[in-house]
Length: 116
Image 1 (tube, rainbow, N blue to C red):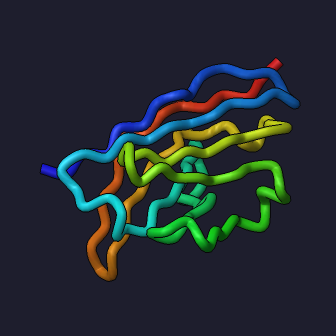
Image 2 (image 1 turned 90 degrees about the vertical axis):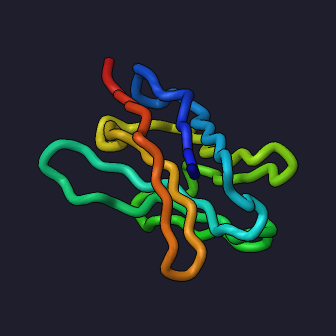
């Protein structure tokens, strides 16, 4: 059974940094596009970033404005989201996502709270 497990969330002050990690099991990790989504109360599920199977291409939501970087390690079945200059609006549950055509898997999420 495919599982995506996120970690690294927590409470951080505005302007701070966090790195989220996601480990994927029971999946041919190296062929999937991996991504991150987020959702906060009262807001829609929002795309954050994704990265192609070989890491050659990345995409980011316009709201990120160069503050986040997505990366992956296919040898370890891991994908990361490095987040800098965090803002209160970044507060959300962050979900790891694996996509291959119409096939999609998503983790249970990790909470990021940005507050002073």
